[in-house]
Image 1 (cartoon, rainbow, N blue to C red):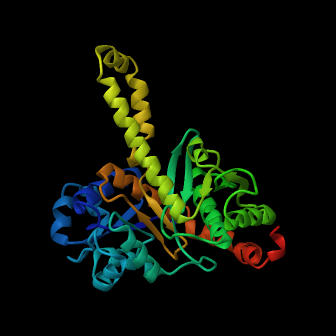
Image 2: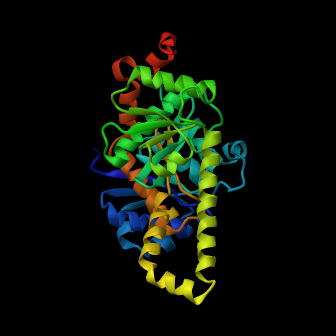
Image 3: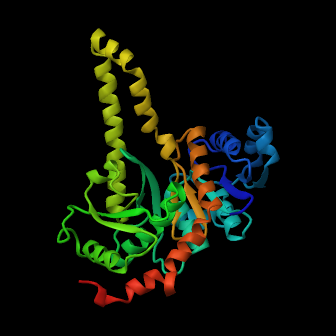
Amino acid sequence: MPSKVRIALDAMGGDVGAAVVIPGAAISLHRHREIEFLLVGDRAKIEPELEKHPALKAASKIIHTDVAVSMHDKPSQALRRGRKTSSMWLAIDAVKKGEADVVISAGNTGALMAMARFHLRTLPGIDRPAIAGVWPTKRGESVVLDLGATIGGDAHHLVSLAVMGAAMASVLFNKPRPTVGLLNIGTEEIKGHEEIREAGDRLRTVDLPELDYLGFVEGDGIGKGLADVIVTEGFSGNIALKAAEGTARQMAELLRNEMQRSWLSKLGYLLARSAFQALRDKMDPNKSNGGVFLGLKGIVVKSHGGISAEGFAYAIDVGYEMAHYDLLNKINQMLNREGGALSSVQTAPEDVS
């Protein structure tokens, strides 16, 4: 574990840039005193915010650029216009050069993924990176991936997601052997697309010591917390994420409207106010902010663009945990166990029933 964790922040990413990034960094620094920050962006916008936080100023270095990637840029446009000059690129470049252990941006997701994949490259044995997020459940939290980095995927890709997700879960949840489930339309082994069934066969056959494969999990099993890690390809993962976020907002609005219908409902709210507050705290989107790009030769964390300073601080916390507990080394160890976990899976057709 490094004594210091160096974090590069894209200070121009997101809806408001430095006005959220800097106070968010100050909040996270209060929780993790060993962080050092590289603040990448327009010095004229960063310094006024930094003056409000003396402790953060003492732990930070500014890398100036006035070029920012727009939230509306297509990935190809961002690569052409922002390569080597934008705050997003330079923050990623700090990780590439070893000047930072992790990069965090609230900017354009597609551009961030394109730049990170182009500049950092993928780990050996990984075909495509994935976005992994922390999902609140009835039993606590689960890691869910892929949440939309790429669409589709064969059995080898799904197995690689399981390995990387288990590594992330072991870091976040302090579990040496996290449980893993494959998202499917049913729990029976005969259900689902061929690549999902094949991935399930491989995970059962290989029996990796770093994860405990439970089998298929249906959509409602994510919220139930049936596994520490839920694996799916990016198309269905992104739909599941957006459906869950939309349902949470809908339920909150319906509940709020019902609480205002009559004096009896308002009285009921007052009597159960502590329970409602506990529910709000558990479902607070700030506390699940920070999607990790897994599969790259560097740690990249994506924050929501319209998040608050407190929410951005949670994304920094995630990046800190990933770097402090050496996520990349853990993933590499799992991938290369006994000559390569994924290689042995990929080249063992006789193991697939």
